[in-house]
Length: 284
Image (cartoon, rainbow, N blue to C red):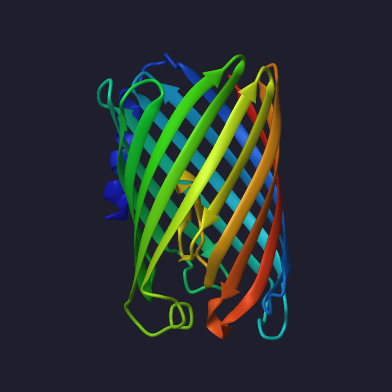
């Protein structure tokens, strides 16, 4: 199934000519600090990606690597993992666009979700230039359990004077199916419902963004299929704020993210996570 899914994503590339509308490359760096955790101290995350648009097709690929300092005991080693994220989009008509997603946890030296696969498929309906909605279904396949996730989002764009605004809302429904007894899911709920709200504004060469998620979630696919929470943590609250600036073909952004979570294996619900993220894009 994995090979078939990748072929469906990559096949249209062999029919492409050289006419590219716009593309970009990106890199990001994250510094994470854990407070109240009995498992982790801090972590560093690195990522690189490419985003290619051609006619009615869109391709996006990200590679992510991370290292975390753990507390020993209870853990025996520091954590390191690598992930790959893929997304393919195809504009079907003026109003409809189809998307597929794929995530592979290439390596995780601690978690039982090592080598897990996530598949996604969705449809976007654009009512007009200002309003659109998307529904995407994800399926996360791990050795000991699997997760079905349904995302329904609404996006609205407007302009006031010289300031452009984008507002997005999303609802996530997560269903966890335990195939074998394991420490990751034994304290997790069977179902989760989480909602989020994001705001982005753009004035001349400056960018501002803010967002928040409410309601519990675990093992969730986030960031439009480019983040996956594959460790045994139940997140409760998430708040984010960011600023950025465009300089010629470069866009640089800085973000701060605050999260509250519970470590499921030991029911430790006093964890806070602070994330500082730096992102750089180059458009060509």
